[in-house]
Image (cartoon, rainbow, N blue to C red):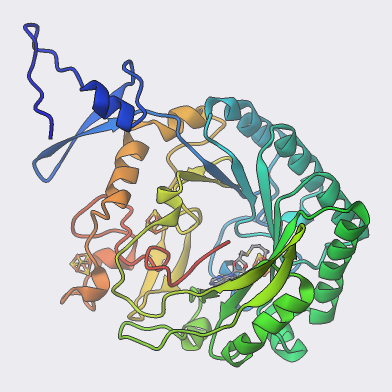
Length: 395
Ligand SMILES: C[S@@+](CC[C@H](N)C(=O)[O-])C[C@H]1O[C@@H](n2cnc3c(N)ncnc32)[C@H](O)[C@@H]1O
Ligand code: SF4
Ligand code: SF4
Ligand code: SF4
């Protein structure tokens, strides 16, 4: 640990090897913060690597699992000027290389989705599209290939048609046909991208079909299958959850061979954690990500990007209030990212400076956790977060 000694003017100089190791410019600016009596320097750096853009909150489906049963937010498309503002701010982020177009809506219902993808691809950004797959017709499939989309992740919550229809209110055969359209468009163009992913929300009513996921994935040429547990937005979904506070046997699913360019590789299923108590780790913050809502509001993660209620792991009904650190219509994305409040919040999340409400003796009577507050640490609190436990996941 290098010792910092002030010079004759009372100024501290950061050692060169420290700056090199952290890849910090000598002229970098910092926020000087305190936590538990320690002094902390937070570099003010535009080091965003990944953007999640919610192009719409509208959807062509009304799945049983969906947040739309629990929120009061409007059904709206991102406006052209909101997207243009985001685009104008991108050059400020030299490390940004990835954009995920999904969130709590269906991106393919946005009337200008292809134009949005094209503008992102012109900036050489890798684009992932998360979709229910029902609007993936021939034209869209060909365009996704032509535009060089990196990955398309399609939600499939049942391998049997009836199970899928129960969750999604739609026909599995249509989605499978659309996935094959995309495969055909790739074949005709001689393209290996977009690679295909599927997301499966595991519940009591469909978990028996998880065994068949690898076989289906192999048949469809899927490169990765992401399994998430259900975030219970309703009492009905709370009855469907498979995970719990106490240790539970992990889910199982096999692998499958998948062709990748000239190679064969092994497709894998990414399984979620099944019980509370893991070392908390927020993928959004650790991946240097930003979530931008349909109206330009900037949130740190999906969990805080809307106002809704859900059931915590120990069954408490919690009201989550949307939290934004700014809006692209009022400030630049770089200013929002490097602001004191957002920088300090990310630091608290990285250190996971929050209590664990499900482990607290007061958990059943505490009013603070009925909303996303807690008795210590910053608010909004991550104290009950199922994403940080890897129980709930996203592509
Ligand atoms: C909200 S959707 C938006 C994208 C698109 N409309 C779709 O369904 O794929 C994003 C992902 O969240 C998943 N999802 C929906 N409800 C969920 C829940 N209650 N818990 C966990 N994941 C959920 C969906 O299956 C999907 O893979
Ligand atoms: S398709 Fe996606 S956004 Fe639409 S209702 Fe289903 S989970 Fe929600
Ligand atoms: S907010 Fe604090 S007191 Fe309340 S349940 Fe969580 S840890 Fe316990
Ligand atoms: S609420 Fe969860 S996902 Fe959001 S910042 Fe906190 S730990 Fe990350």
